Each structure stands twice: as structure tokens, then as C-alpha cells.
Image (cartoon, rainbow, N blue to C red; front, side, top):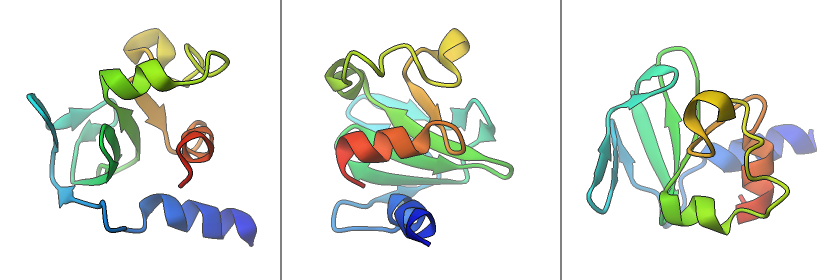
Length: 103
């Protein structure tokens, strides 16, 4: 049960939440993810967004947030070969990002 509660906290809006159909972070605007067009982008904190598409989703991290990652996580995202540490897949990676940033 704790796992389900943890996963609910990942996507539950907080006082920092901003929900859009795209990521807007400074000069960055992203409408597409590795899983397709973004249908819901939830800002969890500065530089950290959780996105959903019609089929899937995951976390997006800004360049600044990627720099903050612990060394043992850098280069380990499921999509690393294609997208570096920018995207973190909801099934394989989300828990690691949630633990690092306290979600």
C-alpha cells in the first residue's frame, strides 16, 4: 500500500503545481515527450515536471536539475541512450526521482 501512496504523491498537485499541456520552464517550451504529445504537464518544483501522454509518461528535468542529480544516478535513466538524463520513465525511473527530490 505504501508504494501506491508514494506513486499518488508523485502526481498529486501541491502548492508548486502548475498543470498545462506543455512544459514551460524559463525559455524552454516542450510539447512532445519520448512517449508522444504531452496531454498534461504538472510542475512539481522549479525544473521538475511530471508529464502524461495518451499512453505513458514520466519526469522531465531541466538542465539545472540534471546537474544536481547524485553521481550514482547520472546516466542511468531508462531512456539515457536516447535522451540522457532529461526524461525519467514513470515505471522504471519515477521512484528514483521522487526519492531524490522528496515527492
